[in-house]
Image 1 (cartoon, rainbow, N blue to C red):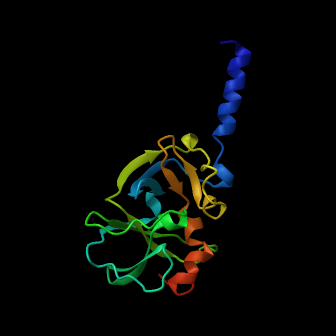
Image 2 (image 1 turned 30 degrees about the vertical axis):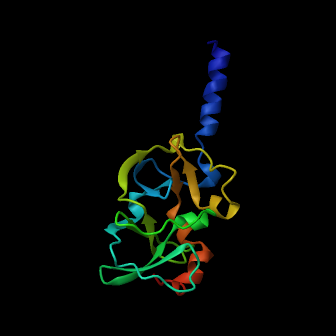
Length: 180
C-alpha cells in the first residue's frame, strides 16, 4: 500500500470515528439486552438496577403499545417502556424470562427522570467502543433515530438514555414532569 493510499484510509477512519449526530458517548461498560429479536445497549451509568418482571407488571388499559405497564421497584411505581413499538414493531410481551432495566437521567432537557426498559431476558455487560459505532439504519423512523447513539458492527442499537427520557412521548404517559 502506498503512503498516499494509507493517508486516505487514515483520514476516512478519522471521519467515521466521529460521534453520530453530535452525541457525546464514552467508550465503556454497557448493558446489552434483547427486546424481541432486537438487541439494545445503554451505558451502565444510567442503570439503577435490573429486576425480573415476574407477575408484578400491571398493565394500563388504553395505554399506548410502548407502555407495557407499571411495576413496583423498591417501593416506587415505575413505568415500563417497551422499545419495540417505538420502532414500529409489535410489542414483545412479557414472559418468565423478562426483566427490566431501571434507568435514570438528570439534566435540563430530561422530562421523565426514571423509567424501566423491558428486556426479553436478563441483560449482560459488554464493552462498547464509540469508534466502532455507525449510524442507525435508514429504516429506523426519524423520531427514533434521535434516540440512538449508534449501532455496533454486531447490530446492537446503543440508546442515548438522556434523549430517551427527554422525549415528550414518554412525558405524555408518565403522569407529567418528574413523575416516574
